[in-house]
Structure formats: structure tokens, C-alpha cells
Image (cartoon, rainbow, N blue to C red; front, side):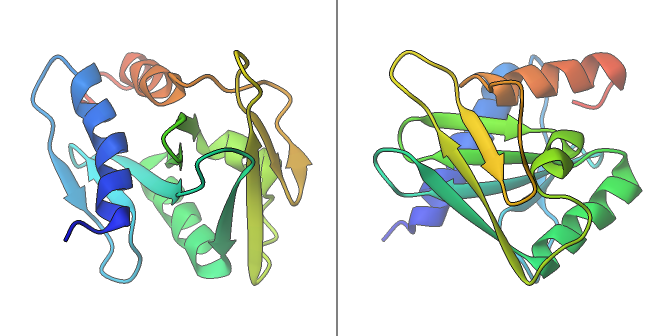
Length: 155
């Protein structure tokens, strides 16, 4: 039986593979938490998923998850969070954008809510703020492409 997590993580991982023109190495980097992967030994990605068919999609973050994201950011200068919104698409945020919706004062549990109206982009709201810029369904590929341009040979 295929677990839901594997199906949803796979959708994000296949997006990463499909957007690359070269070899990709993806490694699970946490024995404690699920959803944390390292791309080509240089770029951490945290994949969260919601099985809800329609939005709003709510993603919970435990304090330990945010602390680990912060640790990865300090180690690698980035930690992308990819939100798999059911079968609708993937909204991805850089670490800086994540800190706009969930600040550095980590509570025991916090959440991020993502909404999308028909033919519109995702709106992202967290406990500590609202992302002013809307996020497209191609945001994961866009962030990776931007990261590649900033850090040559990341992927």
C-alpha cells in the first residue's frame, strides 16, 4: 500500500526532477522528521502536504520543525518549504517568505493556511502575517530556477 505521504512527497520531488536539465541527487536528511530532503547536497527542501481536495489547505508546524528549518537555513543559506495542496498544486516559499508568515518566535504549534480562488494564485497566511505577494502553482520550479541562478551548480 502506498502511503499518502509518499504520494504527496513524490509530486514535489517529481517537480524538482522535471525542472532540472542535469542529474539530481535527493537525500532524506532527517531521521527524526519526515519531509526534509537535500538536493545535490546543497539545497534543503521541506515538503508539507494536505490531503484536502479543496482549499483552504492548513499546514501545521511544530516548534521542532521550525527549529530544524532554521538550522538548515543557517547551514545552507536557504530552506525551501513546498506546500502540496491536495491535487491542486504546489505552493513553495523561500525561508525569508516563511519568516514573513511564521516569525522567529516559534510557538509549540503554528499553522499556515493557503487559499486559492478559481483562476487565481495562492494566498498564504500564517500566525504571524500574510504574504503580500501571491504564489503561483509553478513557484517551486521558479524558486529552484532562481536559486540555481544565484548559486551556480546547486542542481
